[in-house]
Each structure stands twice: as C-alpha cells, then as structure tokens.
Amino acid sequence: MEYKSNIPIYLQVIDDIIQKLLSGSICLGSKLPSTRELAVTYKINPNTAARVYAEMERMGICHTRRGLGTFVNEDGRLIDDLRHASSQKLLSEFTDGMTRIGYTNETILTQLTEFLNKKAE
Image: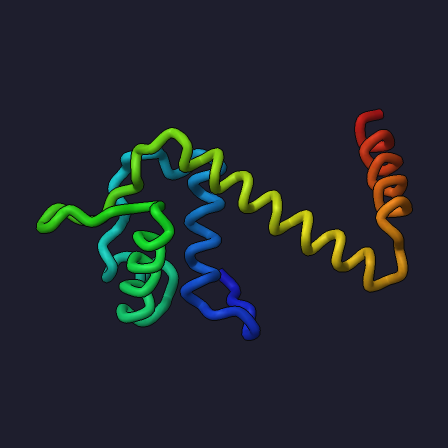
C-alpha cells in the first residue's frame, strides 16, 4: 500500500480495511489479524497497528475478545452505515473539487447527469 504523506497512516489503514468490508473481502463477524500481523501486512509500526484497532473499536467497527483476538462487529447496520459515510465523503470531495474549479451546484448536477447517461450507454 502506498501511503499519502498528508493523511495519518493509521487512518489510511482504517480506510483500506473499511473498503475490504464494503467489498465483501472481510465479512461481518470475521476475525481480524493480530496487531503484529496487521503491522507486517501494512508495513507499519506495531503501535500504529494497535492504534488502528483502537480507533476502529471507537468507531464501532470491531471489538476485542480477551485472549481470542479482534473481530468485526456483526451488526447488520454496520455495512450500511460505512457505505453511507464513504459515499458522503466521496460526494463531498467531488463537489468541493468541482466548486473549486468554478462549477455551480446546478452545473455539477448537469455534468454528473450527462456523465452517468454516457456511461450507461
């Protein structure tokens, strides 16, 4: 994984894990790698890996079972909530970028509609 210098590494790892949850390559209820394995996989410091899991627990994505490891929560709303949050982030980045180059909300909507129509053809 290539890390961006302007975003903390632990947040980039969390985003990658969330993408894997949304794509289905990590399932609800599944056991996540140990912090040591996570550190090796992502080539990060073990303290950073521990921070990843601590933050994901705070976010309600996973929980730790003492002596057993860290597991993805099984709440069925988790995927919907993560998908909604991801879509809002992407939409915000897109509209902010379009506004920066001079587009109005109406023009953004027109451009997006045209793009989607062409893509559907």
